[in-house]
Structure formats: C-alpha cells, structure tokens
Length: 240
Image 1 (tube, rainbow, N blue to C red):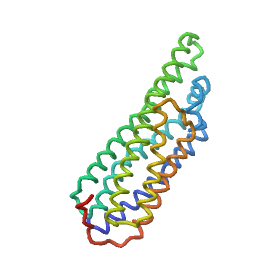
Image 2 (tube, rainbow, N blue to C red; image 1 turned 180 degrees about the vertical axis):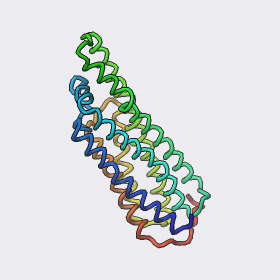
Image 3 (cartoon, one colour; image 1 turned 90 degrees about the horizontal axis):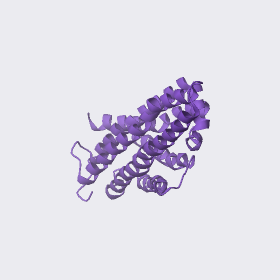
Image 4 (cartoon, helix red, strand yellow; image 1 turned 90 degrees about the vertical axis):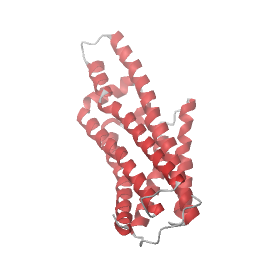
C-alpha cells in the first residue's frame, strides 16, 4: 500500500470508527435505555433484555464490530505516523496497547451476546423460583461488574487512553500531523483515564459516555485531517 492510499484508507477508517459508535447507541438506547441501564438493578434490566432480545443482539453485534475495528485503526495510524512498515519503539508500544484494548473490549461485550440472554430467559421464566431469581440477580451483578471493568475500564479507559497518549506524543515530537491534533489527543486521553476511578468503587454510570465522546471526536478529527492531507516524506522518528 503506497503512502497516499495508506493515508486515505486510515482516514476513512478513523471516520467510520468515530461514527459507527452512534449505531449501537441508537439501537440499544431505544431498546434498553443504554448506557444508563448499565447502572440499573437486574430486576429492571433483565426483563428489558428479554423483551428486546433481537435489538440487544443486533446492537451489541455492531458494538463488537466497532471494538474489533479499533485494532486495524490503531495499527494503520501508527504506520501513517512512521511513514513506513517499520515502527519505532513508541509506536510499537502503541500498537500493543491497541491490541490489548481490542481484546479487553471484545471480552466485555461478549457477555451481552452469550451470558446475559440466558440470564434474562431464566429470570423471566414463570416457572423460575424466587430463590433462583435471587441467584440470577447476583450472577448478573457480578458478571456485569467484572466484564464491564474489563471492557470499559481496562479496554477503553486504560489501554485505549495509553494508545492515544503514545500516538499524540509522536505527533507532537515529529509534527507528522498538526500540533493541535496531538494536544487534543492528550486531552481526550486524560478524559478516558478518568474512567479508572471505577476501579476504586466510583460508579460513573452514563458519564462514561461523556469521557468516550472526546475520544470519538478526536478520531473523527484525525480522520478528516488524514483524508485532506497530502502525503509527506516520512518523518524522522529517532526521538519517538
């Protein structure tokens, strides 16, 4: 892939990545009041999941595709910044964080496609005893907290933020892209890192959407910049 094609393809994928999130937000928001429902008790959420089973599956399948797309995006951004297939140390680290973020996100989302429908069906079955429902509620809370921490806290708030820190630092050091984009990236990364407070028992609830919005805006801005950028000679990345 030549430099121009790589730049344009990366820009297009960044725009798609930025906008694709609105699809599961619209579908799941309408079906189960997502993401606010993540903080609701199982007695509220499980009947919704059962009643809106098709919409929940479609919404989370799109969300899964969105999360998997982050890996090729993270790799291609690194290649654009490097100007070649050979990545300097900081961008190699960035790609590693991109892989970690993708894996953590997908592990977090899978619960909604596999475990949660089973829990919802059991909970809403008229023949299910009250003791079994109580057990299902405990399992739901435990699984939601555990997998949610892997996907949102580790996958987005930590690994995606660290990826963004790495690429933003390279932007600022090499001037491969506009300086304001590197500064914006550091600010968006700081917003993402704020989500780590959930590891200390602070429930951000729907506020997590606000912190991720800054990241989505950065990707949209970066995509637009790359789509309108003329290929330049490969930057010197010795310091990166």
